[in-house]
Length: 411
Image (cartoon, rainbow, N blue to C red; front, side, top):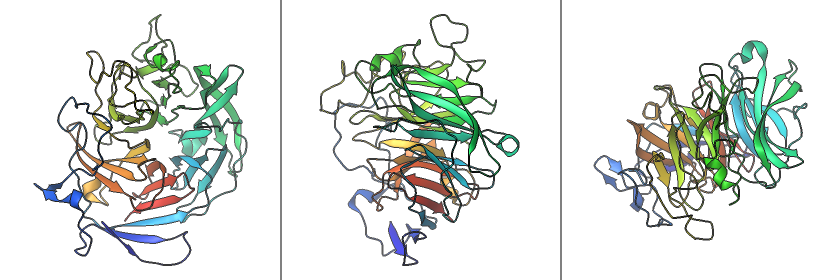
């Protein structure tokens, strides 16, 4: 893939044309075409000798976008951005990890900090995190966000809501509606993506807080850690959840056995809920979420401890625990993600795009019949830790990076 500079000057507004069909582009050994696809984009040795449960569960064939598209840096003036919500008029509501909320226009102008939010603990992986807007935002202007909150017992993932004032300078009547207990004296694995479903209820992801002592809570149905939750806009358990009416489980739990879920998205054609979660050293996962299912952490995993030791009994498959649709080894370190809808770039329709942190790229996945059949890397030459990617009202992808950049990727 070759990047051809279209304008030279200040970084803000830098525009790149991407054309994968440019005959002058250097030919990469790992992308030698085989049977209309390419070799897998990952060429590094895996961390483990673990065997996938089925063919194509990891290192799918490589693919390349043939439609030309632009990559533009709209601004690099954000401060540790974390989450993006797309407003009805196309502007972007962006959280910054340190506790500020800003609005960015599609030409890269960034608002002053919006006040009225409760304080956050931004140590480690904490801060002001995932964000979404009410399905009726056009009339009620309600915003929902997740953040790491201090308590006397430690920190926890909290969900709050408030009304974005008409002058867009403050959030009015900010109220915490849900706390993912128990709290823990640590600063890792808060999860924290938010997503409304078609019934007007809110999906919330949490992490298991990373430490060995908290990991088992992913399997504990009386804990909110390591879960995908489904709550009402007031923070109550949503009706129809899979553990509703059970004395031995929290009724807000939708699925469990997760490590640190930082990506949630609905498939635009099927309506299915998909998630990604961090593995430890390798074993990052993409999962198709079904209510009440157990996704296995920390009992089954395709990863290792960060020191290279095996985890638990080093099991990758076990009856009663769901297999990831796809996993990465070494790592993708995926954060936010979105499915692409529309036809501005035809081969991207219904593809999944995942923001990569340590992998410093956006992963494009082609999914057919709930299996990954192709993988491509975007922004791979930018050397940016990509924190979130969402599709805008104009059909383009918008991505934020830890270094403060906002990208527009599309026609």
